[in-house]
Length: 432
Image (cartoon, rainbow, N blue to C red):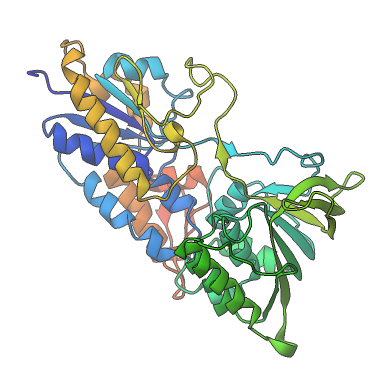
């Protein structure tokens, strides 16, 4: 193809970065622009990975090298549907790849989940991560919390709620949110997993990690039984839970955690406010259980929006193909649903890139201007990678000695730093 490709990637998280890496290898002369509504790159890694899991977040350094490469541009602070339309991107780029993840937490689907003390795990994780578009106040969880969900996100939430401030050394947690929570921390947490311990989706390593937190007493009301011939992961999960049960914090107990495997939520009950959660055994529907709770956190995955996505209709998962229309593709969770780890987005991106390579000859050969063809006012608001590095440096400088960085919870503040419109002080605040 004689005309260099102009490629737009919507979303700068793992999916967007992986697809950009793959496409750059296939089309080294192409111009790739990675758009994001936020002023910062890295998406899920920055705001969706728990703030105390810095080893997982370290993949940002790999993605950072991508943005330093020739013909790869970061265009933050540009939101599709607000600043530009999807049609504008398609008209100015040969290829557009959707890599923006999924919009929201999946509902549990039981009566009572609309009560005011029912919170979504995605929101809590973003709050602890100082997400600039999630500054809606810290939920009042109360002394007794029920977490519905048995995957790694539910374990992340549980870990955040049972840790003490000193356990967050070297993290990038929002200290204001943490301080608000520890003023009235939970004293009892029930983790409710529909799957049995054999089939639970949680990582045994993450379960075992809970045992390193001081002052926690763990219980599991039902016997720990692993099915005969169960995979090694199930055996490791059972061993991890047995290890938790063997811990005796004695008089130092701060919080009690009960692990309920094989129980499905039936309803969340309360007259205007959460009072309890009703469960039913998945192995014996004659067995019901009521757990008192002041609040409920749901962690049952993320889902597609039922509405019309920028004229494309309601999106559904497609495990077979990333192609959506002529020159339009998708990758990551917005393609296959909220399944798999960050690393699995790499193989997904590689497969979609191969689809693009196979079909690129069918694209129209006319020249398309790419990023340069967008309106001046759109490009003027963009935060490029060099501008983001100013924010990055300011966050690192503002961090106290026991934190890796202090993220700014204000989008406008970040944009002002990026565009050199704010004088930054050592405390992380500034003046125009």
